Image (cartoon, rainbow, N blue to C red; front, side):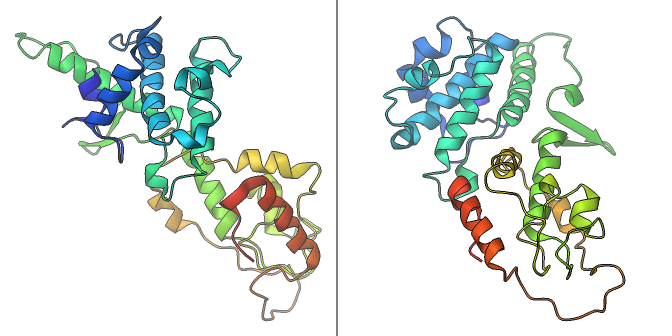
Length: 285
């Protein structure tokens, strides 16, 4: 199973993490990975063990980002959610949050827990397939229930859950598309307020509106807004290129040249505060 889930002809590999990294991670943290779990079982305990294996690999690769924790076991012990699937999902999330400080490309990011579970499902299917390789007949689950999808007789990999992909599309649209209002975006004539597609219903950095008042307050809404903008997925979204921009101005107003970004001091202060909360997520205005 270790050979399969670290990348093989049937299952994708982890960018920048080869077989040696997984073998080293397993041998150095064998007690943590398989102590009360079993990497070879195709159930929740196997999935949790797989989460621990991947977490060990990425912890070793980016160790300075996890100080003061000296080991992956120490980091896991800081999670007060028991030893079930919830605590292991939290471990993956914590590692991803710490990794943002040291990676140079999202290709190096640890996949989220949903993407890892789909990877695990594919690995389990391959393990069953290889185990029955010498049998006269095989008994395997349909591949479209094991991390793949069949569309028009073509088999494709399911990289992430629909929920995560929707969140990524929503976040990308919020960063790149928006309204072009000229009256402060205070009514539902503002597409950001009425569409429900923008994060929190607020205008974002992709908007071209003037004197915008539809912004999150620093004390209340901004922390919730940051939670919504967390990176949940690591998949490429070709569909994002199809997202249309709302270039319409407020209804009943004359067309005019719109400034390329929000000029108000209030909006700049809003983004300065948002930058403190989110680090490098906010572009320079």
